[in-house]
Length: 317
Image 1 (cartoon, rainbow, N blue to C red):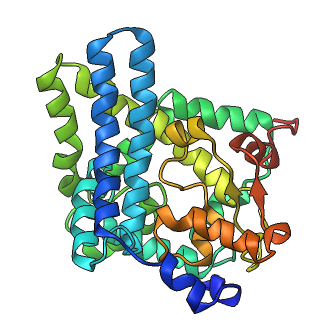
Image 2 (tube, rainbow, N blue to C red):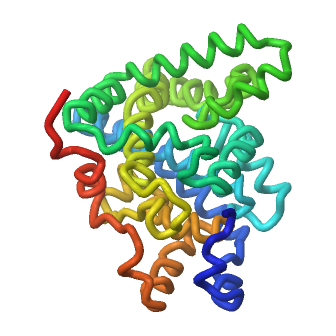
């Protein structure tokens, strides 16, 4: 079901929550890219290993932020008009992380229509959970050491070469790539991905672009994407129950800075009414609680609790 929240919230409830704002959309874009600039500036002013690590983590989290804002644009919720959502969502959100907004929109709306059912294209991401602590450690190690990122990047390059000129094959492959915020059409996105690398390297040392765009992309970005996926749909019900087939995760200031930017942690609320802008989701959360639905909602107190539910305390290979 595309909008299960209509069964629990009235049109009077939903209408003000669904109001979009060009001003807020512009602020979110400015904030996301501003944090990236601030992270590099931090290292420029105090160059040491600690500030470099902080910069990598902040930039990787904002690369996820760009994916989240692309997701907002896919729902036409970032700006008021489809034109702004399409153009800014594609050029300033999707392409800098080698993604493609139209492909992602098509795949993602299918996920909303068939959440946690056998037709859900994201089901493969959640079926592996709950797993074991050893399995989670292996996954996180691959992410943080760049193995996941390199594997996906080389796969993207290989697929772009193999399917060049075959439009139907590209379309068929786009869903699998969109699942991890990737586009099978690498070449159109490449200039915008390389632009931050070039700018950083020109303004600083030659290696800054590699250290503060490519490295976060291959490591911390992959880690937080996986953590987000686990928290949202890992170890939840395989059903159409909108209170139990998705999870909202409470996030404090540190988690919001490094793991869950732009209210992405309010995932249950997002699935209730998918076109509500991300900055309105805390209000929807409070409204659902006020209407007495709190006991029915799957809410983790932290990302640590979400990992426990996904199998962190389970022994095994």
